[in-house]
Structures are given as structure tokens and as C-alpha cells.
Image 1 (cartoon, rainbow, N blue to C red):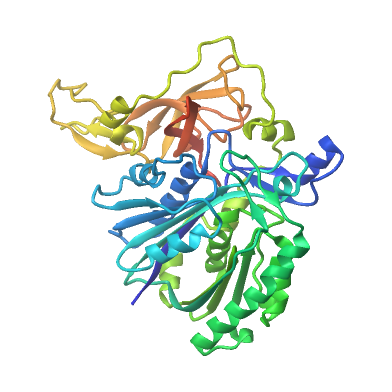
Image 2: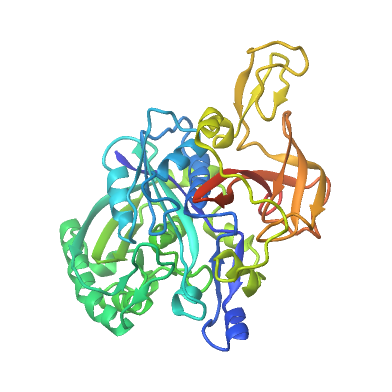
Length: 469
């Protein structure tokens, strides 16, 4: 039996109160909050974080043969973004890494590719950007999800589905644009409702089910009005329609359906049925049934969607949000621009830069960065690589730098001691500089340090363990 063997979502640490938009601009905003990827995050980095959660929850020894990455807002064009995810998760070089990017519906291709055969992973990620005061700004959200497919230890199995494709202009964005153009939402409702009815009818017929038999129904799409209308039009029980989390994290575009699925699986019971309805340039329906293995999965599971949301902060200022999204350009420091990361040295240090591998000598001493020469014995090339990305640490000392440039000042730098050995100096992220203290527990997080001349400099920072430890 093949199907989903693990999953993981990532909700960024920061959320923006929509009322902050109204207070600043006098319009827009609304009720609730939206999730916000930090200034040092993008669709690649948050996909890595979702993948780390999924792999931590996966059966022992799980390793995907391929990874498929879908997003409507890729960090790179021409260059494959999935290779950075592959490297950051330290996957074998024999595992493939492929992008299927450019639209919300790209996630369907990623899921189809990953579920085809053997152990494979699908990553979906989005950072939604809208013009200040607009609906996309307030209603969008940033999040990622990773789904592990395989055989054995299956917690959720596919038992049907259907799709309907249609060409109509409801939302579009030209290459290089930072925000989307939208047709009037009534048109989206007019176009999507009959498509969803037809796709859901075909899926139910193929599975031998009636709409009222589903335990959980997820309706996802960037047109909120159309999604609500579809939920009422396809004949499912109102109590079966899952919360889309839009009042808490917003609509995460390409990632929304799978983040909602992760949330439903966090709460579902064995033997229940789930219908995922995606509205994007047509309609795709995916039918799933949970198995008894779900209980064993829960015993080892960490970082549910609800737990992550509970451990976020919703006091982000609107000025910071605009700065992070590039709409508010602030005066830079009187210091030289950072150098563009060069390709050759990055390739030579790939395992360190992306995989965060140190080296351990014959005495067990851990060197960070990795070294060819033992600090204690002087032995040369007698090192064992050791991955430190998933090892927790303790702050030994720290400093708050209010002069160094950052889109989220001040910069907090710390020296951290890893459990089991290894000391490293790094920057802290998702941290309150007024509350950090020696002895705080931290974990590593994959981030984008800066971008220079179109090159993203990815590396690892430390962050306080969300929820404490």
C-alpha cells in the first residue's frame, strides 16, 4: 500500500494584525491576522523548514528518491530552487530535485509527481505579496508544507479524484511584477462554482461516495468568495467543511490547500475520509482516507499546525512589514555593500553552507566550521562529517548590535554550545532582543542572509525553540 507516510507544515514566527493596515492607511485591512515570512525568509527557506518537520515525523530510515517543489513566487528563475531544498535537507546526491513553479495550480503537478511511485516528497510554498491597502496584502499569507509519499506505514491513502481544466482570466501577474491583477470576484465565483460541481461530482462517482459521506472537506483557492460558494454548492455537510485558517494566517496561495490538509490530519481519526478541492484555473479534487497508522504517527509527531500558530507573535508593525516586502526603502548604513556570494567557493563548501555539516575528530571534538586538522590532536584528514542542523544548542553569550545593518534591527549575535559538543558563533533570528539571555535554548533555522546582485546567500541562523524546551 502506498500513500502519505508523513507530512509537515511551517507557519512563520510573525503575524500582522490586519487592523494595523487600517490604522496606517485608513482603509484596507480587516479582522484577524496574516502570517508573514521574516525579512530573512523566502519560499525556498520556508519550504526547507516544512521539510525538516516532515522528515522528523517520517518513519525511521525514510529517504526520498525525488523532491518536487511548487510555488508561485520562486526565489530564482532559470536556476532550480529545489536543489537548495535538497542540499539543506542533506538528501543523497542520487535523489532528484525538480521545480514545477509559476502558478497556484503548480502544486497539483508536484503532488502528482511525488505520489507516482516510490518514496518521494512534494513541497509547496508561497509568500503572498499585494500592494499596500489592497486585498491581496491583507488576505494573503506566507506558509509552506511538505508531504512525504511512500509504501508501508501509510497514514493516509489516495482513493480517487478528478479534475476539470478551463481557460479564463481571473488572476494574473506578468514576470517581474510584485503583485497580481484580479478580475472582479463575482466573475471568479461565476466561473469556479460549476467547474467545482462537475469535478466533485466526477470524483464522488469514481469513488462510489455521496457528498454527505465525507468527514472533512477542504476548499482552497485564492478567490475567497468563490471558495465559500463552492463549499455550499457541492453538497457536503456544513460541519464537514474545514477551517481554512484565513482569519489567522491568511491565504497562502500555492501552500494553502496542503497547510489545511496538514491541519486536518493533525485532528483526524483513523478511517475518516478527506476531500481536497483546489480552485485554480479549473478545479482539482483529491480524495483521501486515513489509516490506523495515523495513531502511531501521532506518537512521534512534533510541531502541529495549531502548535506553531500558538507560538507565533502577532505584534509585527506595519512599517516593518512594508520594509520586509520592499515597499518602504530605508536609509542604508554608511558601510560597504556585502559581496555577492561566489559560485566556486559555495560549491566547495556546499555541505557546510547548505547542510550545516561540521567535522568530528577521533576524540569526539566537533569543529564548526568543519576543519581538516584536529584542534586537539593535530591529526590531518581524520575527520568524520557530522550534521548539526537538527541538534539543539544553548546560548553561551550574546551581544545586541544596534549599528550593523538589518531589515529588522537590532542584530543579535550569539555564541552557542551544541548538545553533545560543538561551539558556533551565529546570528539569532525570530528573537526579542530585550528577552534573550544566556542559557536560552535555541535550534537552527535555514535562512537567506542577504541578496546581492540577484544572488541569495542562504545559510543557517539560530532561533529560540518555539514553545520552549
